[in-house]
Amino acid sequence: MDIRPNLISYPVRSEINQIEPRLDIFWQDQLAAVFAALSPEERIQVTEQLLTPKEIFWDEDEEKFVYRPAVSAGDLAAGVQGIPQHLANLMRFLQDILYTLKELDDAGKIAELLENALDKIQAVQTENKPDWQRAKQRLHANFICAAAEVIRDKTDWVIPENRRNLNFPVIKTFINEVFLKQRLLGHLFRTLRNRQLAEMPHPLLNTFLCEEQKVRQLEIVRASKYLFAIAPTVETGLNPFGLRRFLQEDLLYSDDQFLLNGTAVNTALLANGDEEIQRRFRQQIAAIITIEGKVSRFIIDQMESLDKYHEEYLFPLLFQPFDANLVLDKAVAARLQEYEDMMEENILQPFKAIVRRASNQDELNYLQLGMRQLFGSIISVFKDFQTLPAIRGSELAEVFLGRLVAYTAFLEKRREDVFVRMDDDEWVAACNRAKQVAADFKNLAKESLPDYRDLQRKAEETAAKISENPSFFNKLFKTNEKTAAKLAEIKQKIRKTAAAVHDKLYRFANDEHPQQIVNLEFDEDLPAALSAGFHRYALPAGENGLTGLPLPVGLEESRAKFDLERFVRQFG
Image (spheres, helix red, strand yellow):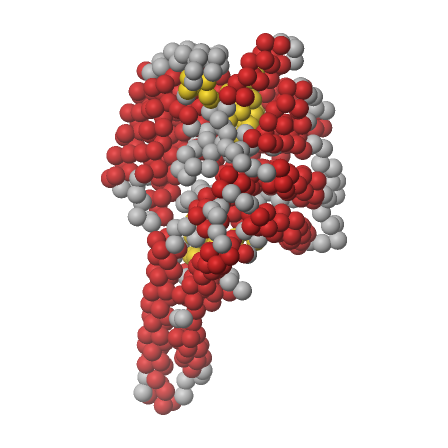
């Protein structure tokens, strides 16, 4: 068997994985530039492993890359059928928004319209009904792609007065490749970390911006033509990648003094050595509002050491060759276990210790944001890992990704239990809250186990009697018919017991502990393959939810297929 070596370098894999043809403005130019530096064999592997799954193909006639999706990216109703009236009303509202969007030529009004529409989608209630929730998610994704298509087709608009020289291509790129893409991908949205900035060729990026990000925790996004530097935030509910936020400028005492939430630089122009572009970029970076406040060098250095461990040990571990002496599934499981053990020992446990050392709220804010950004990097690398031929379609890897995403979600959900000043007693109380939800979830199911097992035993015994050879008297008195009726009655009791427990568990997971449970299917919109047939949840693990990756829990969607024994086993 001819096994070709993997020739795709990590930088190439990462850059191509970031391309989203439904949204990106200059993705064809970006992809052509990447391909120009590849060998023929590398191009073949990139096409097979990365481009074909994205439905990107090379058009021989037009001599360019093209996107050929199975379903039109601009179809708002694609995959949305049989929806309730309030979701049908939402779809009509979104269609009107798209018509209005085509007519608008003012960037400020476009920002307000898009944020209004996305907030309306977010606010729609689905009453914990999976079909409704999936329809809502589909509408959300369809609207973003349709809006991106409208934005991409625009040729000009009114630019708000600004001191950053923001022009039409910059704002257009930000809308599609930062604002809309982040709303589409959530925690899977990619930002650049220090290592990636340090590898960039220009000193403005690999030295100046690299240091600014390290100290001020700037969110850095690489788009198809521009690099965006964005002010971070830890304020609950405030999206750092918001469009209106990016456009806003606050004037201070004169035209030369202002505050910003972000800026951009055309990376291609840096190669020309234009000093004025560099000077303006430095000035604008200095004007970006950040939250470093009273943060000690110790805290900054400790977070940097966690970043460094990920880059030097965890990241390379994922891409090492798998043990050929093991069946591939076992080799993947062993790799993920080693990865988790190393992460818990060298990142999660030290992070908890750093949190307990924080001396003020500014330092706690810095730690929350730093860990959120670090996990953004961890998730991005893991998504690249999932494109390896050995990992494609791996359920183990999908479940592990869900745990990584859940840890990131808990950094915000459990902020008041982790990133506020607490004495030892308050910390212990927060730890107990984190542990209690898993215990309650398990006990809710476990308390019905004795009756459930007793009914299962009776069903097995009764079924065994039916399978015995019937005697003359059994036939005479129709004993088997009576036994069969009894078996049907027992099975009905089993179904009722399981259904009642299933309903209690579902209510517990979706209604009772919103801060202590992540709904991976609905809250985080993870791939459908992960949730097929199951509601997927994650619960805090380790000390105060910090020292361990969250516990994954699956609950069958169908009450008829609910297995109480299996559910309890998930908790160990």
